[in-house]
Length: 138
Image (cartoon, rainbow, N blue to C red; front, side):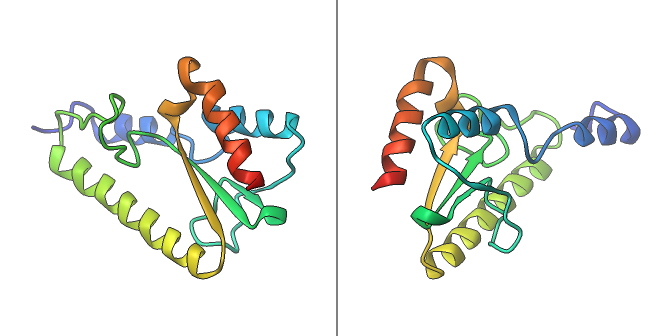
């Protein structure tokens, strides 16, 4: 099935999708800052430019959108009905890059925590943030 939008409309829509400073990311940042954690943002010197870097704990945190990173078994990961092949390849490539970056970071001695956006929905948010804070101090 062809795209339902013309190229100009699709380009505009895609340009509005943020890669950093997303709502889930800001939510996590504010909470952890309140808990007393200090961090660096989007460190370009590290593979994958982690969303948050905690040098004191030698830990990086990635906050992934369920759709963009193909969160298996998640209700928010639904492949669109149009251009399915393209989307499947796009999401697979994102997953491959995630795996490569995680390998490189582990080889460099970093601990990696990945938080999917579905874990930040109101029902699961508090427990997810408490678990994240506990993992950071381990």
